[in-house]
Image (spheres, rainbow, N blue to C red):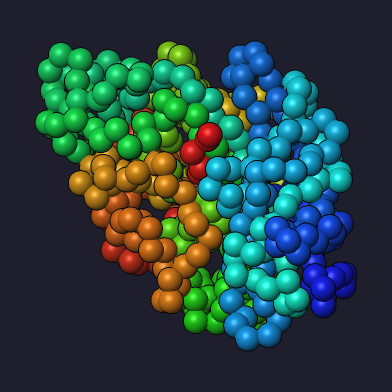
Length: 462
């Protein structure tokens, strides 16, 4: 339901749910300043299974909040709201950090704890003047929230010393490679990073490439059908047509409907991933960051381990409430992965996160609590195989806009040679789900849309 408020004439504010188990509500506008050309956006945000811990993994989850607007006269294009750093307010128990590029803010717990959270009375200040909006224009605004996990700064191991395909290793040995602040040199001797036949054998990794050592945020879950359809419905028709996935959504734009809203979205390619990343103010993540997310900092690797830290695999065979928002594990009761054609289709994102009695292995969770890293959908990430991937600059996040054709226009984000696939999927070999397996790390989709490929996005921490 839309609430009519005023920016001199009128504005319409609605809240959008844009993630698994997260809600944004009670969005209103207040406090217009016609001198500074700003307006306060008020909202509440809540999500389930939140945490902050200062022991063991020492990290926390949070919500990425960004705002879109469109004029109700003239262009129907949704545009990204530019925020101000000053005068933001967060509800009791939370902390909120507006990002330096002013494209959004992170909200997370301010103290250790676990369980559901609800932050009410939050405020972000929209600098509508910077976005070319006049004091008396009529606009519509939507507030989006997306669950993320903070991956802290720290050294970690690439490779496990096992038999994974093309796994990273150190020099001429099979030992894992330690990622620190030191520049990374490729090679096959000494302490160089050996790409094991799948990447450069000489030279130095560019300093701008995100190795995973420095802190970053990553999506807690794979992108769902509902998340992706919200993206499409907030593009104009031409851009939505470019990015629409074949055979999934029903209805007519801008009222497309996700038939299984909580299931991971498939039929994706690298261009669509880049578009969603750019539009959301996020970025792709790298295959080195993939291993950091899975293994954790300063954690000795287990040879041939999966992302939950062991070599034990219990493949999903059947589910309850098929395709519904409460889809859950049926058989076997201890299933921790949807992999290798055991079930045969994509499932609800985060399906293995039990409400009680769970462990990292039972939930199929990465060290930091990120879900489905090894299974369900293979994930597209920036590779270390090709020069275009190695040229990726992790300091650049999406600016909220797509070009006229509906694609990202940032650097080489739309060059499919920049990407590869990590993890496995519902119809790929379980062996590909091992943390250090690089069998498809340089896979080029060449623009093809693939049913078992999904999206997970990241953002460099500040």
